Image (cartoon, rainbow, N blue to C red; front, side):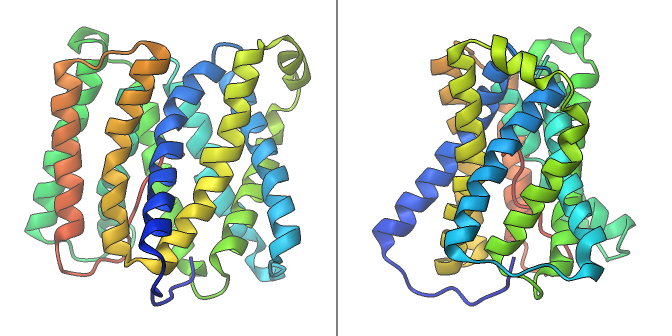
Amino acid sequence: MKLLTPSPGSPVKIFLAMAFVVGCWGYSPTGIHIGLQAYEPGHLALLRFLLASAFMAVVAVFRGINLPKIRDLPLLFALGFFAVSLHHVALNFGQQSVSAGASSVLAQSAPLFSTLLARFVFKDRVSAWRWGCIFLGLIGVVIVVAGDHGLGSIDAHGVLILLAAVSWSFYFALQKHYSRRYDGLTLVCYTVWFGTLLLLVYLPGLVNQVITAPVEVQLAVIGLGIFPSALAYLAWAYVLAHVDLSRATMTLYLIPPTAMAIASFALGERPTLMIVAGALVVLVSVLALNLERRPVAIRGLVSDR
């Protein structure tokens, strides 16, 4: 997003915007689990972002956005692929066998992979502190995956959630390329729209699933399309316009416990002690990464949106 100096804003409005973002992104894993009761993973991702695309189109009409340059189209498609298509398809397939609470924790590991990208793709120097944070975070990831269903039942679904986190890290790496070309709203709109275009490969069969899906599932999917996939991004852009990035991202550590609370209420999930312990390890490692004062090339913020 466009790099601007944060401007003063109403503390109450900023607090409410932060709480709204945490609530929306905390709801996402539960909404996905409900949606998967009637939709295939690919169909769920497509329907969710068709709704988000329509909503963002209305916002774009009233707010106005810049047209993309022709030379930027390939990388805008790449943004849509990593932030929307790959991320959400992998997330949906992964959550077929991973609890909502565990999924929210694994998705929060994106900054760990951002640091690995900085080292092995962009050839940046990574300090011993950051290597230690990565190692600690990966230990936490293993604990969460094992604690979800037990050591003997680890399968590819947990790996798919991690793939979604890696995909989100690539998105932030590419987003940096556009940070001085487009404002935040414009970039979000094109990311959602291009990602939705790529998801159209799942269009066959979608209408039949929409017709047969129960009402409660439809409401959950509508919520996914409007709140985590559209409104939360607008609220997050407002927060970043008024609060320093490092302070704002501290709020995002509330997402996993919020996701667990929502899943406990809506799905009856009870996170195991291993999941809670692994979550603490992952969040501490990511927090330690963000507290280091040395600048790094890529800063991943959060996935599972």
